[in-house]
Length: 451
Image (tube, rainbow, N blue to C red; front, side):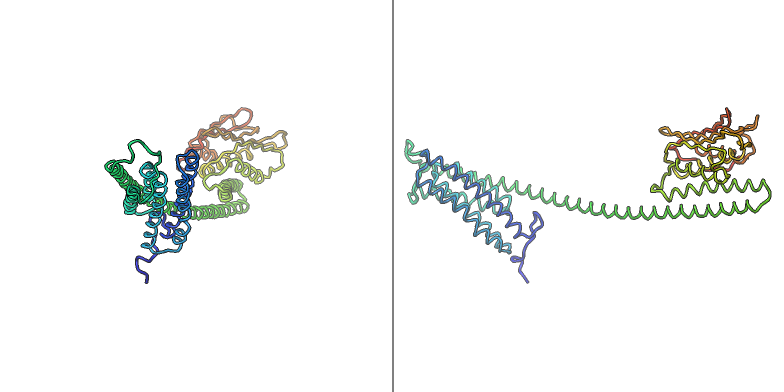
């Protein structure tokens, strides 16, 4: 069993093994380091050409840049093979120490104490460490940077290292010890201030990453839950649609069975009045059956288009009265309109009563020419007007159709009230019933026909 120090550790930043994220981060850092070093070397070329740097300084800077680029190869090779957390942290410190050695060499060859502005490179390394490494590494690197700069300046001061003045021999000679220590103190303080700021910034960055990761995980969980809920709801809706279609299909079959029984009963009776009543009931049941048939055959289980329904209903009524291709010409002109099931059933019953009444009573002389029966549906934004008109003999003179004993006309009035509509009669040149009703309001609860 592996000890905790040798087990691969999950990275907190992107939930991948630590050695993978370590290698990726330092590979990106190596690329940035190489590009920055080459850019520094490129800026040293014109300084050498104009005499700011001599040949020894330029060769020293070139060697330091080559070192900074070449050091990436063995260190990245090791980073790709180590798995232990402690080994990876030690390698990370080694990375930064090697960086500091190379950049300190550049500062030395660029002028030592005269090149104090180049200590900003140390600041860049500290900020970079704050992003890719643990917090404690910041102060380790800051201390190493300060020591490296102090060491190279002191070695130059004691002539252990050759001095390369950046600006040549200045009046007054070499800086005093007091000035040197002030500069070194300022540089060291600057490096530790940068480390503190970078530590605080890295803490905020890590907290933001952690909070963002938690929010992302929560959002992903919510999305998965919502997707699962939507799939479950979609399945329930599909099952409900199948169930509703099955209900409409069974209701249609039952109504057709009742319709067939009424027709058989009508054909088996010799009493004209009874036969007419049974056939009228047969037509009403057939009308309701047709609505249910259209519902389960359509894709929309909430509404049905009245236009094709009226055509089919009128065609069935004409066939029931043996008038297809006969002397009475039936004309249908209906605008498409989608209405709920209850509305469609009531409109169908109204049309069934009015058309049946016209076919039975409006044309006593079928040998006459130009006999027509028209059905029209005009749709407004929130209402529709149904018109059933014929050019037959019209209603008997003096008949108040609103107070008649006819069950069919009483049913028409009740259905008009349930539709929250208004029905009126126009007896000019035949008979025309106009039913205007809203297509958005729900019908009222059915009531018994008035007597």
